[in-house]
Length: 204
Image (tube, rainbow, N blue to C red):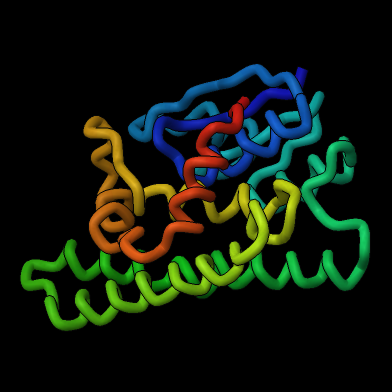
């Protein structure tokens, strides 16, 4: 059975958990504590989750895992078969991690300073909310970010955008607090409906 190394509240783990459930892949979970990453270090040589171990084939990084799952278990798909559409989705995935995640990471870093730059935080917060408008437009006339069907785009974006709706009281991760406090669903009904739709899906 495929083994998944995970940690509580991890957004990157949730990406993989959504993909595994979508494909109907059974997993054995190994839950690590943030204070003791030795189990995942032992299997992958680094301390970040998620990591999967597929009978000795070890893959780390959520994007790499999604692509591995698609190659190993192609149905039901998470990536389009058409090369042009696949390239568009690859561009989106790269944009999300390299560009979209910039402002919330910068806000978290700013808040960790002894004297946070409040005007800078406000400007970064405005960028985060303006990007929610892009998602509102992406969802015009379709149920998921890249069309009618659930895809890797939904796996990648949902664990972060869901904080625009709510955050569990026991989830006190600083980055998640930023996502909660600097995103709003006001005037974005399609994003709100999409969050509810994806949140109803199973996870591994």
